[in-house]
Image (cartoon, rainbow over all chains, first blue to last red; front, side, top):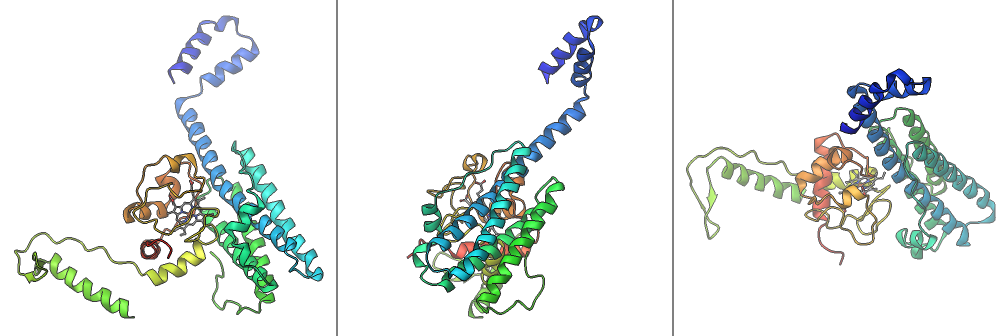
Length: 194
Length: 146
């Protein structure tokens, strides 16, 4: 604050010799304090949004890892691998879209952990059948759909609301596949998520 | 059912104590005392409803026993924030020095970024009963895993 006040005084003293660029700089440094503090608080809000989206990126990394574990397990029949790869592809697109948003907001997208990390946190050692894989997928997709819906309210940038709602819808669509595969009871009560 | 009955009888005793009718003496018997200011008893959350809510709203990122997108939760009530081994916290939560008392958990679940600006958790529970229930569920899962 003090620093920019000093700058402004300096520019004002030299005003007689200012070029067009100098005049622009003058206009910028003379921005009222209120506007500067709005900018500061919106930068803070952008930083907060980036952190929240980073949790979603972590979720996508975990999902991508889970489908890698599934595809590497030898338990997914050849007839189903294309579908599993398509679903995993959606998660990769989510990851990329979220990472682009985090970067745009001035944040740093979180990195993926290793497959070994995901195998441990998802208890992959207990997976011995296709049904186990379908159950895990249903659990992750359902959790992700709910998590995305929970992100709408805390995100300040309304431009991000559609993005996370789209992702919630994608995850819910994936979950429906596994509900059918597992012949689970389809929930009678709406809303199904959130 | 049983625990509801249990809870409501505790509630009655508490209410009697709060209203100054009864107070426990040193050996656990109750003696009449003078009427004082009435303390507002905190309603107890429903841990079973809390477990259902936890399943729906929290398990995308958390579980009781494994670190995932968020840290593991067993024993969280009474613990220092940002202290689960092997979980990489955001700087602001790691440095926060908060203790997860029920009151702080209530503030956290109302809005994590309001309590700890810069945190990575966003999920909010605007409904006070939902917060109470999920906190009751977390309180119940305090013992270390057998």
